[in-house]
Length: 310
Image (cartoon, rainbow, N blue to C red):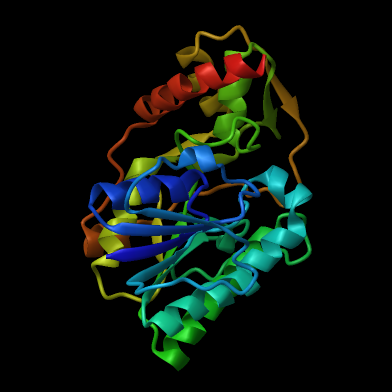
């Protein structure tokens, strides 16, 4: 197949590129490198890289089988630094990516997020839950951009009959996450490896569920082979408190870091855990990598990066 991936030089996008190239597909990456890195991509005869903002009109030569829209800054730091870019890539970027799919008569795959559930009143979160989102909070630029992207994808599916897929990605981690990313696992590992204080926001009782990036990629590939248009949760249903995560990472890194507590950010969800019944039944998928195994892979990836930054 010939697959277009927006955001293909980013954390998750680059792992997808690697997977598709290993399956002998041709891949066209569209990325403006605002948070992605060209070093995340390796030279390959089946890879074309277009340095371009998908929010601008973009042409792709040749046939296209899939357009996979994975472009978007996605960390809490980005919500503050890049709010307009996040809103644009979720709105005009999604429309442009769908436009490529429409012109090329290609299938379309949207990377959405568990953030569409907001600070959930339902636990665990099923795909049928419509969410509890504050539309004017600092986080809302990401939450609402993804909610708009889902609405747009379904509108193109219904009106233009485009064959679409939507995944809602729960907390995902692994190599190629930026050390300065601002998400909890990258923060904690970076702090622990450099023996800086590990900063827990709030009292640490808020929960998250963490999946390793290769498990997510496997779920994406399986959904491509299934005719199903409603959203599908992809995440790990095992729940950890943030304080427990800090303790696990401190232990795995043999760190001398002190765990310190800071005020909870605005609209930070208190609990986050996916109901993956739909993915288990339809895709025969569930995460395989344990948290400790995944964290060790990421710790080994970060060690040389953090040495270079000293």
